[in-house]
Image (cartoon, rainbow, N blue to C red; front, side, top):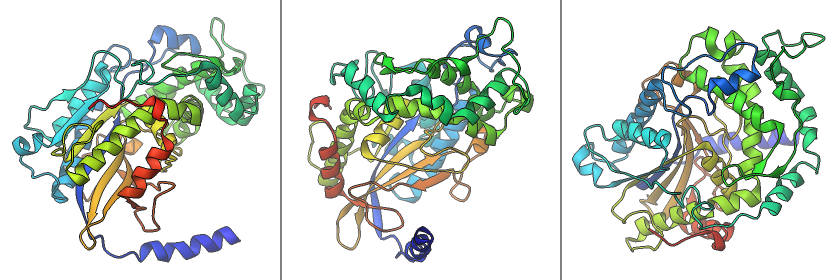
Length: 431
């Protein structure tokens, strides 16, 4: 009853907020790559299923699809409309190009995503996407030698979240495992007894779940959960890429059931990247650079570790859901948008940090939102406008958000919170 009363009292409070009197001074857009082909080839995936996985429109592993490019350009076009309305951009691409900084993880999928987004944001400009062929310290600080990962601590930190019994996840996620097995082996969910594993196939839902040392890419090895994530990942890509219904989980999945079975995939990401120890080691450097960039934009003073110069009004960072999930965990950020499970870093979705200035007091504020196309907007390649936008969720930032409808943080409080949170041993001071 108390929860109901609290919720009821907060609704009119939030709805009654005064009109926004802030001006957008800078925006940092931290987005995931677009819809892609699976992370494993069909020669691997077909070992896990009774029927062969469908082919995407383009060959290759982890390659952006043509529809993925269209959707990412649609998203960039929406940001163009919004940022022009906010008067952060002028709408003149030649002018605006000088005030937008693009940085992407240097793998083809992510570079192609950044280019597709830029084609919507600045359609007539020849943009420069900053990247490196070696490990980018923003997105891969351990591989870049900026941060050090203690493998034993990583294993202990994940095991500690599971009560020292990783196999208990099989019970906690029994409905999702049952649904996954029924889809993979092509029988109705709830069939009793469940059919035997087809000859020559591997039942990934029965593999033991363990926690052992992993790699810099996947900090811990979760045993059977690793192959589950690989096998389930294609389903959301099939749906959002617009495949025929008969090809989405072999006709056994829709948007709702994909979201349900995807809880297993999300749990893998949660353990690998949202575990606090891992999030701190892997994301402190990025958080430090983002804060320095905001301070530089607010003060006009050159800040060591900022991304570019104070003239940049928009900073667009493109990486993977691994990066976004870990970064969100570091700062304690949560969101929920229609059609997805909580905290899902959806294809193309982005955490957006708005540096705003009060026109009344001159105070600088940080407003955080999560923006993503819904699964059906992606599936239908829906054009986005200010009146038909993507899904947008305001994000509360623990330790600094105020009680208004947009959860604004005073910039000073945001900076102090981030600097308290990050690991100073895991950052560099390169611009």
